[in-house]
Image (cartoon, rainbow, N blue to C red; front, side, top):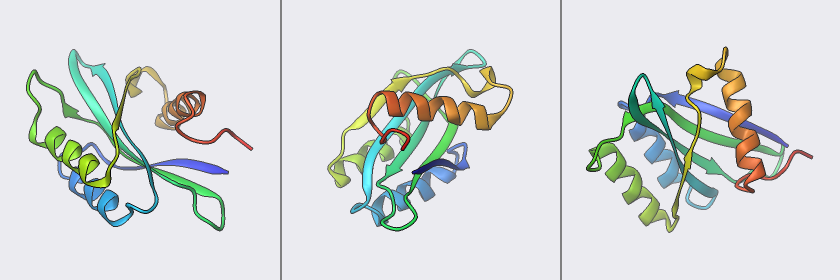
Length: 128
């Protein structure tokens, strides 16, 4: 099975595309995940929509807005929209604390690290 992160952007306006993916793929939606981290002394989050694998080709997309949503004491509009999308889809948001992507020399290595975490916690199927 091929599991791949598809980066939409950092979540400034890309969050709306992620929300549209969630709405239009409710039948394939497996999980909604918020990855929290500290980057440049700010608490930020990545939002991830994990879809079930395709019937043919065995491809599992993980759509992500990476580390662009600043977390504050009260929820921002983007966080509220993500929560609302989860409620409408009948899903709970899984919250994980992870290392920032800047810890890794390449973004591809960061995504491999996250895939390992998601597999280990059984949010996505193991490598076959």
